[in-house]
Image (cartoon, rainbow, N blue to C red; front, side):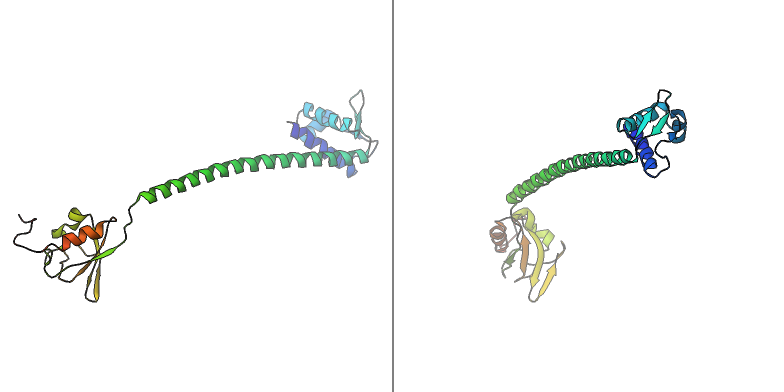
Length: 211
């Protein structure tokens, strides 16, 4: 791997700067270096070639490696530090761009969802509660909520009953309706008209539901 032999070359250059290897001294042969770094001889050859090209070391025909310059070792490290920094920044940019693309896609999905929800909400009929007064002669007086079947007749649902100063929240199906009760109902835009018409029917003989 390129990063492996570059790392080894950088390490050798740093050791030269630290005077572990002095100028004019010979560094162990490639086979010994390979053993020291626990890599193949080919990896060491590439690492030494990098240092040779940068005039940090020289290589004899007998493949002995000699130290040439501390200054060149320093420049070698600085050069590759900057190269690594550029590479790291490029990698970071690529990662950020990928994340940005993912965020853009997610934002587009969310915006489409919001638009979709908004469109559906526009089509929903408002379910604002309204009150319907039960007159004294209403045909539903004395009956339970279950018996009058308000939803079947009007599409309205009773959510509360106001009786004098009391209010019965979520009355059950067995709740009995009294005269002058005010039924709090919810439904579509025309629920008030339909509910009033139904509740205001007078009790005359048998109820239509009893026929």
